Length: 229
Image 1: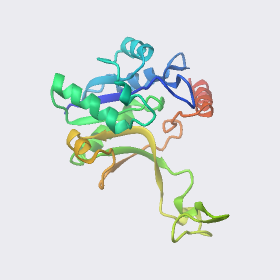
Image 2: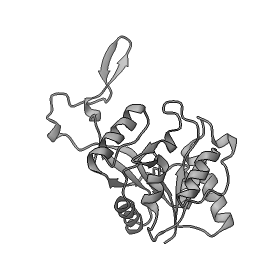
Image 3: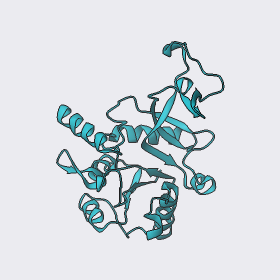
């Protein structure tokens, strides 16, 4: 099986500037994902899609392939991860050979392990190459959430479960952003990483499921690194 690992790393970030190359544990943030993907036999290439020359140099030095700088139309806030993935996938298959899967690894999940990546690939292979998404237990159960209606709070769901014990509720999961694996055919036809029969890759470790988006997330990542290393 041949899987193309794609790490999207845009240079611009309004909420946490230059986050993809901020140093964490003595190396740029993006290097954590590159290192986790290296040495996995099913991965035929680790490709970094970036619009930033500095990120490109850092990624190349870490062993990733950076064949071009991302076009301007794919480097805006409006560009989607699917558009970025399809651009990289189309280029790779045109220049090399077809692949069985496109693996999206966001650089903002630094503690995702090689073992978890391998586990996700095994799920992909054993379930007829259906989409596999990394998930973790939801922080707030949807049965206990609200929305605003005029001046008041109303239950977000039609039949909430207020008063129920948490252990009596059906487990709920949220996408943690650490792992997306899909076949090229499904990605091109659905234009989405999530399908009607998506397979969950359970990530129970809060550390491994951490997704860095804000300064507080990065501060937490630094604390976790200093605690464990």
